[in-house]
Structure formats: C-alpha cells, structure tokens
Image 1 (tube, rainbow, N blue to C red):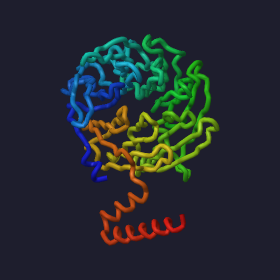
Image 2: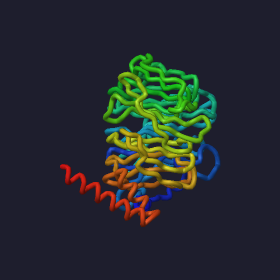
Image 3: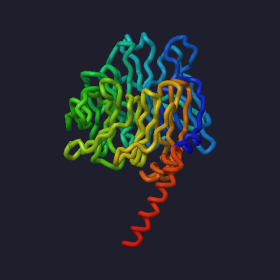
Image 4: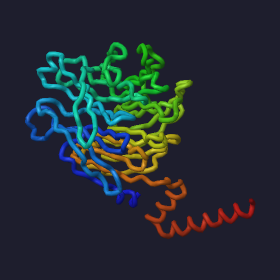
Length: 376
C-alpha cells in the first residue's frame, strides 16, 4: 500500500469539485465551483489530460456567476460531448424556466455550450439534479433530482422519452441496464427498476438492511458492466457508521453478496469500465477499491483528501482511479497491474510489523511448496 501511495498525482484545480467524467479519449472533465452569488469562487467546467506526468489542464469554461455550479455530469460514451446539470438564476427557477440539463461539446481544445432543457419540476432554489447517466449507446440521458423528479430524455434532441416520474423522496442515483431497456433509481428507502419505454415497474427492492439486519439507506445503484445479471447497491447504515456493497442477481432478484467496505458512510462510488473493480469514498476521507466479484477490499487509501471526497472515476484503461474533492484538488491514483493475493498481503503485513514473523511465514511456505511438489 505504501508503494501505491507514492504513485499518486495531485492537481490543484482552484475550485471545489462536485463531479467527474472521463471522455472516450481518456481526458478528465471536472465540474464545480462556488455556486450562485459573490463567493469569489468561479463556477467551471475544466478538462485535464491524464498520463504518466499526472493531470495537466487542457481547457476550461467559466460559467455564469449568478447561476449554480454543475452538480452532476456525464460524458457521452462515444462522442466528444457531455451533459451537466446546472441550475439557472433564482428568478428562472421560481418562474419554472430554469433549463438545468445542458449539453457541452469538446472539440479542438475548447468546451462549447449547446442545447439545454428543463428536467427538474421544482420551483424551490434548494432543489437540484443529484445524478445523471448516459445510456450505454449514448442515445438517452437519465437524471434524478432532490425533489424526486426522475427524467429520461433522448440525446441529442433532449426530448422526453416518457413523462417524467415523481418519486416520494430525493433520488440518489440512476443507471441504465439490461441493454438500456431498464432504468434503476435509488432513493433512501427503495431501489426501483423501471422499463425505460413506459416507466412500468420491473422490480422494487425496499427496506434496505445489512446482513445482520441493521437498518440502512440506499446510496448508489449500478448495473454490472459486462455482467447484465448483477446489480450493485451501496448501503449506508442509518447511524452512518458503516457502508456496505450488496450484489443482486437480476434474473431472480436474490441477494447474492454483502460485504462491509468501511466503518464510515459512503459519499461517492464508481465502477471500472471493465467491470472488475468498484471504488467507494467515505465520509472519513478514505478511498476503498474492491473486487467486483468477491467484494473484497483490495486497497485502502486513508486521508485521500483534506475535505469531502465528492467524485470518483476510473480512466478508460482502468489503470488509474481519479478522485476529486471540495478541497479543490483532483488526484490520479495509479492502480497495480496485478492485485496481491491473500498470501502476499499476509507476507506484507508480517514484513512491515515483525521481521521474525516474516521469516517464519517464508519457512512455512517453503515447507508447503515442498510437500505439494512431493505429492504431485
């Protein structure tokens, strides 16, 4: 773990980051800022390259100071474009004319604003879109808002696929699954899986609890990449003292795996593009990387940032994990090409904590290898 800590590149971006996206060309897009008013911190979208030298800024777009900062963004899976949710001015919101969902194109080193539409039904300035996701084909955009509005629009027209759905609580996460035919929406009390075509219910999962029965809330929900029959959910206990990752079989809707990831509430979540890794950041400022199959924690990075970790994303090659924070920094964490086995971790612990134990373990392994060789 100490070696991995040294392979961390940090960039000071100059604004509190709320959201991250990775482009098809493996650029990092950051969104955030100080929000509406005269905080002195600009609202921005910024693009960074990522490589062996770390993170290097390529371009940025300064947004209006009387509007909100981007609260969430999603990058198109195939094109140089992204969508971000940005609340308009207070007068626009009160008048019901705030076109929060906005398209931006990335070309020739510049970020350009495009179409925009309204996907939040509320006229309350405190409501905002909390999550946003492109379908895997890039033909639809789903969003969930704090007022419970669940929206699905076509891309690039931004016309509604169906009438927007109203949830009883704020929507924490959304994701497309089953070849973009399904949409999962997570609220604190329920995961609802809907048919995209008509918003009818495929499955409702309620009353989230840990394996021991402790009451919890649903924080994130994502369909397994390359694994159409798995849904991953992240639970925070109501005490906010622990977070868990849970696997669901989407053929039978049986709960097939549960593991505690950390003794702290999850604040953000990401899945690798290959679907083999999960990443969770916690309120204790720790980042955990897990095996998506076994849910075992492969890596823990304590004190990853100095303030709340707001966003995580794997790069296109799954070689780096990018994290961002309200502390106005962004990091690229280099991941190992091969993860250590349980024996490797035990040996590393012994080496770090007791030289004598390391010697004894090495001798034991040598004996086991010899016995195995004799009997094969």
